[in-house]
Length: 252
Figure 1 (cartoon, one colour):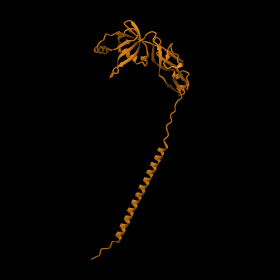
Figure 2 (cartoon, rainbow, N blue to C red):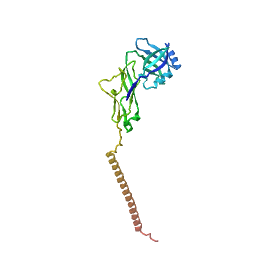
Figure 3 (spheres, one colour):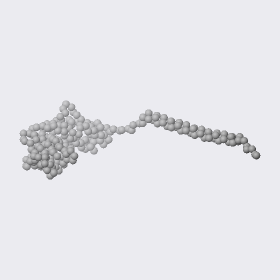
Figure 4 (cartoon, rainbow, N blue to C red):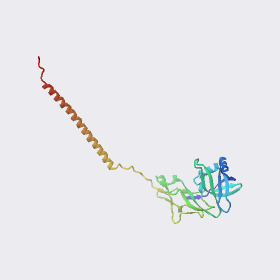
C-alpha cells in the first residue's frame, strides 16, 4: 500500500574562474548561475550552471531534498542542494550551494509525502476528508540511499483510518529523526457539517422592543395630529360665535 523510491537528476556544469563581482554578473547575464560544491576531503569547486535547467528543477517541491548528479568536464559528482540565494527584487536564483555526497555518510532531510488513489478510497467516496498531518517527514538517510518522496496509497482506506510512519516502508538504514513514537502522517476523517448559527435571543428581543417603540411613537403622533385637527375646528366655531355677537351698524 505504501511505497518509497529514489530518483536522481543529472545536469551539466563547467568550472568557472570568476574572481570579481563584474565577472560574476557577466556570467549571470549570459544565462548562467554561479554555484559552489563543498564538503568531504576534496577542495571546494566553483561551477557555472544553466539558469534554464536550474529553474526547471527549482519548480519541483523537493529540490532541496533531491540528490543531483553534476557532470563537470566528464567527471560526475553527487551533490545535495543546501541553499539557494534569490535576487531581492526579481526573485530570480543568483547562487546555489551544493553539499558533496560522501559515501558512507548520513544526511538529515525533509522528504515530501505524496498521496495517490484518492478516488479509490471508500472513506473519501462517502464524503470523508483527507486530513494531512505531515506533508514532509524528516529522515536520517545514508547518502547513497535517499528517497525522493514517500508515496501513500489511499486505496481501501475508510473513514477513521490513520496512516502512521510505521506503515511506510522506508529504504534500508533510513529512519525518522523523531524516535520513540509512531506518529501520524495523515488520517481519513469524517465529514464536518457546519450549521448556520441561530440568531441570539437578545437581538430578537431588541428588534421587538425597537418595533414596539416605533409603534408607540406612531400612535402618539397620530393622537397629536387628531388633537391639532380638533383644536382647529373649535377655534373655527368660536370665531363664528364672535361674528354673530358683533353689533349691527347704526343708520344715520
